[in-house]
Structure formats: C-alpha cells, structure tokens
Image (cartoon, rainbow, N blue to C red; front, side, top):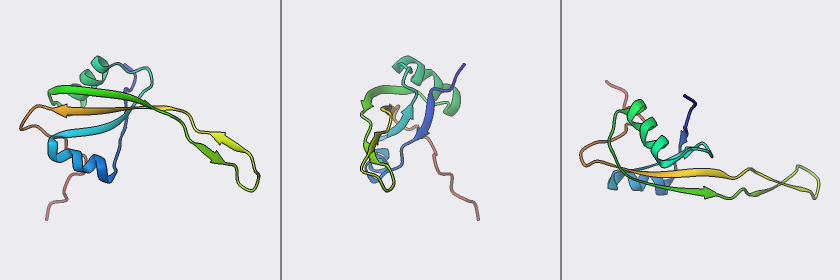
Length: 96
C-alpha cells in the first residue's frame, strides 16, 4: 500500500478549522476520497464524516538571477471532517 497522506497543511486558516473538527492534508495526486478515508482510519484510527478534495494549481517561481520562471507542480488537498468527539493530535503536547 503506497502512502496517500503526504503531510498535514499547517496554516492559520487550517488551524482555525480544527475548532470545527476539520483537518487539512496534502494527499497524493492519484488518491481517491475512499483511499484517503481508509488511510486516515489506518493511521489515526478516526471515523471520517466528509472529505472535500481539490487540486491546487502550481505557482510560478523566478529562477535566481534570471528573468526566467519555472512552474511548481500542482498538488491535491483534502479537507477532512471527523465524527463528533474525535480528533487528530497533530502536535502532541509535551508532558511536564
């Protein structure tokens, strides 16, 4: 089984969504909603209510000291809503 979840997206907006029990992940381009749900259940042991996926376009980046640009590759993002009472601890608190 190949890796469907690439990394969690950590921004102000995505951290605000955690209050609504929603989490944002970068997923593999070929990942389906069912595959993402199965991977979340296997890795984190949570039940998924809803998954929204979107393909984010690549951005133009300037090459160092030239006037040429290259385009970064497009990538896929998934916004996942979990069952009430469940959560994913992306940043575990250090015990004192």
